[in-house]
Length: 381
Image (cartoon, rainbow, N blue to C red; front, side, top):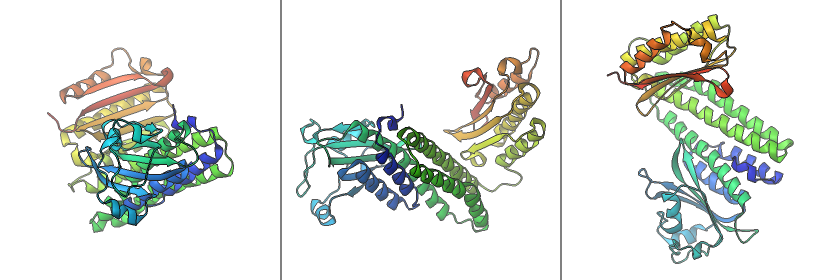
């Protein structure tokens, strides 16, 4: 269930849209973190807010960005929190936590001298690429004695958008630090043509929502906008991985996949939708790359000959030491693609097994079309 299903106030949904736009408008990570806390305090109606950034090992808070406590009081308090007591509970168990009075909780660690009193508490994790980046903390609900279920839903939704913004800022920093002078014009063109334009279009979509909005429409469009931004981040990551790949003679695997997609378009009658993710050129060795290209060629050939499809999606991604290729279509389904007596699928399965991988061909969602998946380690055995 979407966290926005808890939110029924159109005005608060409008403010959420403003907050999402605001935190995605800056590419400096320190500024992004501050924007997140400021937006959360205003949106939820809290007296104080903070974002604790987890250490690399994830066992304590290495940074603590706070809003609401004056700088002179922060200096008087001294050492910043490291994640003990109530704050530590979210580190151990990364789930939303809402308390009417944190001082009465058995895990309460107490406050140091000069710290303002705080009672009502709301904490939610902020995740980046499935890993917890840190936790968003809000205290002292201003218009009530404690935070509501609706407040929690808004905080979770904002945390999702925050995760995308943080990743965006991190990747921007990596692009800025690249020293490949001869690739600068290509980097600028890639970011302008694929990334900036999509971010701009997403921003316009959110701004359009502000003019005419109902709770249900707002929830759907916020969810879709965050998803679009997340997909854009994938494109940025893909571009950066390509730039960081070691220079080798000849064409890279990415280029070969793109060429294959263009070749098959003539037979399909349309361009397949292609997504490449991860350090494909940098980590997939020549043996696995040769198998992968042969597998994709055969899988797409099967679609051309048997699927009667009007859409094909091809995804190749590298993660956790494995390369995964998926070909999805909206055609007749695997029952008719896997023709009796054919050796194509058996050969694809053998290629996977020889590398210590696997292959599958299943029906798509609601038994529509086919989903072909082939995966193997990035290094051949």
